[in-house]
Length: 152
Image 1 (cartoon, rainbow, N blue to C red):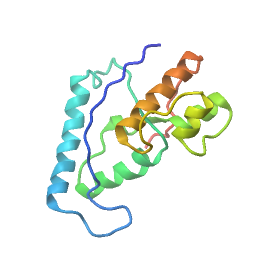
Image 2: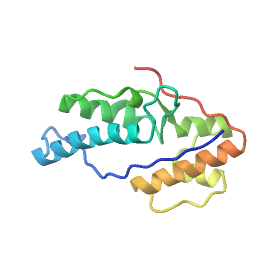
Image 3: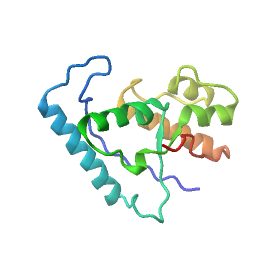
Image 4: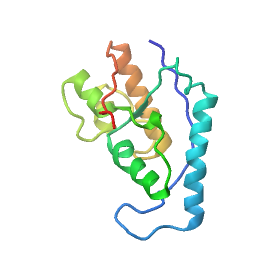
């Protein structure tokens, strides 16, 4: 099994705060629309849109791709790209592999695998590095990853 880890670093804030009905400024809305286009461009550049290439997003929980992203896309009038409609929830994968649920997410998974936590918790790029490290460790131990999300 080969792991290819690609990264696109782009800070963005939601166009609507989760618990607030007031939209943020138009500049932010424009930025989210540009990011949506940029992700598609990045996926194509990395060859991840080729139908012969298997790829999947990995998250630490379902909320980002099950709730937040579809809600933002609906608010902005954007379609949810097909590649965002399936993912691996690392918490679920870890619980299948290790037999216990990681109540404190990445911190518990790192501890359970005797890995050093990288960077600051909830820092986007640091979380990605920890997710990749946890996945590599589980794969080296023989765990086979499968999609955990249900189809839309």
